[in-house]
Image 1: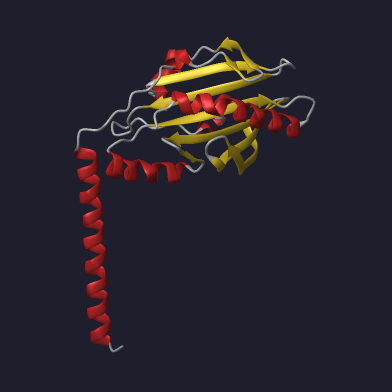
Image 2: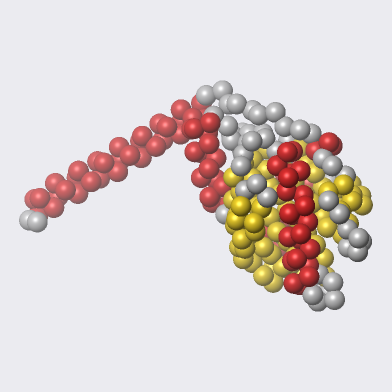
Amino acid sequence: MDRQNTLDFLKVASFRMVVIALLAQAVAFYAFSRTEYLPKAVPFTAFPAVIGPYQMAREEVVEQEIRNVLKADDILNRTYAGAERIPVNLFIAAFQSQRNGKTPHSPKNCLPGDGWSQLVNEQITIDLPGIGPSKVNHYVVAKGDERSSVIYWYESRDRIVGSEYLARYYVVTDSIRYNRSDTAIVRVVVPVLNGDQAAADRRAIDFIHAAFPAIREALPR
């Protein structure tokens, strides 16, 4: 390809990129300018106190200062316990819309501020009832002598997402296709006792298997 042809090609390629960018912006503007569909959600106050072998031990307090930061439309923060009386914390923050700047906060961004540090940061695959194999985030965090196993994911309709970036991508695609941007972040925390991380991980996954049908019922689909 000679110099003139190369310049012509680059001009055409650049023009196409500009056109694609403008079209993408136009589509996004159209999607976000329509009156959004806000699906009805079941209040978390109706979330079951008994989940399989787990019973609610207590309703945790979410301080107003934290609520102001989260800006969630509804929050569930409960501790459950099974036969062994080992606590399992279930936290769900639900958002009816993300168009007004309200988005889920990643737990990994909150941990340092609370004095926790990450020992393990990975994605694992869990076979979720009614969904199948799904990638979720798995952390092991530490503060002093305390250790906890943390599993969390983002949930929109029937979609389970571990990646924050992928979750943001789906905000745009769902706004375009379905005229909705509702989502939720679901987090389960189990303490690591006697240094047995594997046991804490198993307990967290067992609780998720038991609780997932109730979580699906509580969130719009």
